[in-house]
Structures are given as C-alpha cells and as structure tokens.
Length: 472
Image (cartoon, rainbow, N blue to C red; front, top):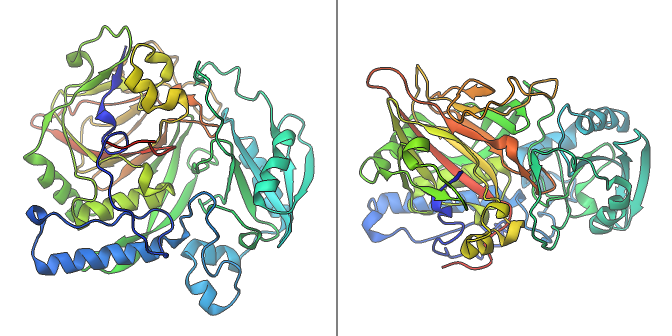
C-alpha cells in the first residue's frame, strides 16, 4: 500500500509567514512582502497591497477559536449590518421560525449516510447570559431543551445528551490506535460562521455542533445546491463578492462540485506558473508498502510558493473562504499535469497514524492521529473531453450503499462516482468525518485523459484540521 506524497508542503514544514496584526483580520490572515524576484513592477505591487488589504476587510467573519464575535454582530443598526457578510445579513432579514428550524434539523440529523460527530441544534432563545437550544436525539427521535449561560457552557451541556456510539460499527470510519487529547467541540452556523457568543444567535437559527472542532459543509442530500458567497479580488484589485454554487455529489465521502471557482485568466496564470517547474509526482510510502510509483501515479507536479504573488494569495484565500477554514491550516497549492494515459490511482489524502508505526517523523506530524488533512479543493484548469475525471470508487448512493461493490481495483474510474474535468470548476471533498476520524470512503483518484494529444491540468489546496505545532 502507498500514500500520496504532497510532502505536506507548507502545512508541515513550509516557511512561517508573518501574521498580520490588523484587528480586522482575526482569522490569521497572512500578509507578506512579495519577493523582489517575483515583483511585477510598482503598479502591480500597489495592486497586490490593496488586494491583501481588501481581503483582510472581507474576511472579518472568519473567527479564530475563542475570538470575540465580529464588530456589529450584536447591532441592529445600518452601520452594524454593513460589516456583516452578505449571507449573515440575508439570514437576519429572513429568519426561520422554530418549526422551520426543526424541519431542517430533522433532515440534517437523518441524512442517509453515517456521519458521526455532527449535531444540528435549534436555537429557542438567546440573550446575554442565557442560551436555550433544542437538541434532537438521533437514537430516539426525542427533542430536549438545553440551557446554558454561554456558548462554551452550552456545548458542555449538549455532550451528555448527544454522545453515543454512532458510527463506531462502520469499518470505513477509522480511529487512531494511539491515544491523544480529544478536540474541543465547536459551534457553527450551516454556512460556516463560528458561533462563540449569544449575540450571534436568534430564535429559529440552526446551530451545528462539530465534535472535531472544524466546520464542514453539510451535504443535506444528493443534488442539493448551496450558493456560497466568497469575497474575491478582481483583475483591477477591487474586492467583489462572487457566488459559487456547490452541488452535493456524494454524502460519503462528503463531496461537492463547484461551478465557476476560477476564471479563464486565473487558470492560465496557474498553468503558466507550473509549466517551467514540473517534476515527476512522488509518493509517500506507508509501512510495508510494496507498490511502485509507476503503478499508482504517473503525472508531473509542482508547488506554488505560499502567498508568492497577489494572484496566488487571492486563490489561496478563496479556497479558505470557501471552506471557512483558517489560512494557517493550508498547504502550498499543488499543480499537476496528466498527459494522455497518465493517471493517479485511487488513494487517500489523509495520513493514518495506523499505517506509520515505523516512521516517527510522520507520527509526530499527524500528532498520532489528532491532526490530519481535513479538506481538499481540487481545481480544473482545463476541460477534458474524454477521461480526466476525479473518481470516488467507494462513494455511497442515495440509499447509503456503494454504487458497485468495491473490487479492489484502484484504477477503475467508473465504479462509484466520477466528477468531470471542466475548466474553472472544482471539487471539494472531506477526508475526515465531523468527529475527526478518518473516512476511508474518501478514497479517490485521477482518471487518464484518453483522447489523442489530450492533457489534464489541475491544482489543489489541502487544508488541515489543526495547524502544525512546529514549523521548520
């Protein structure tokens, strides 16, 4: 058996970038001086600086654990609304009734896939010093109200109500054999707002508990489309909002197809950057692996310097804003090229501590199973007419069963689901379930481009559930 390489660039051993001290960017926005050798002239440097500043202002809603709520959350004034993200303003203007919330709560609780560590609550009331939430107990269908003085106390009160062995009997959900401190439970809205104070809540709100401590987009049901608003910087250096529809293509593994994630100009930029830097794609080998690279991965790749230009920084922040995960959790963007007949056999993006007993450095990097790759955003830089899909051979259908029983063939592109390579689109999928355990159903690969002279260009951003303790 083998593991993907990626070398955990940036996240595990990349250079530490300076963290902005701007109060408007509590989510660890990264600012850095563009290296002279990469500078594009004074004009472009000014645009780059403006881009970073605008991004910092736009990302105010992404909160770090324990940070206070963003300015204006408790205010009903026009000035207060102005600093809120567009999606939060929309929710304030069209709140759910408690009955509507309970209907959505039921749907999220009983999706047709085992998804442990996720508990949608309905907010009954919220005021400073007192929050009441309604819990739906999965095992019995009973609803219970829980009251606490603040969000952290609410999470502690919810634990004994929802804790169960749900998912423990699923052989495709894997826990580490090593012991490590459990993650802190956290509360998020269904669109990724980190909920840390009563002022962010109102009656009828859905508030989702994540045992693993990081936000994961709820899948709802196959074919469900969520319009995700993300701030981007256009070619003139102006901050604009872009709506990116994400369509649920699988509930396990949880996977989404994203439309219009990149522009044609952005695709061209990434390809041009990578053209001169490509090297054969390597692998990271697990203990007792007996497979050759040629059997598994035959593409070429390179990595983009973390924050290395205004364009790169813009793309990185777009991926992090889309996932609602902090910048500090991301790796360097990887760019890959597949020519006709080249492939990447089915593999997993996570690093299971259970597969690296004889590799102390890897065990330390993943903190014996506590830390791992959570999300992958894979971008398609060109369209491929025949082949080139991203495939998930062990995905579940709407009935919660595999499309075709797994036969062990890591090159069978069409056993489960396959997402077609379309220029500018992307696929987002998760390697962990909400409680932080590994999802073996996230097994995936890259199909061969089949047409004469065809090639596939792609790029991806890996995002971890925790930042590394040490950086080289």
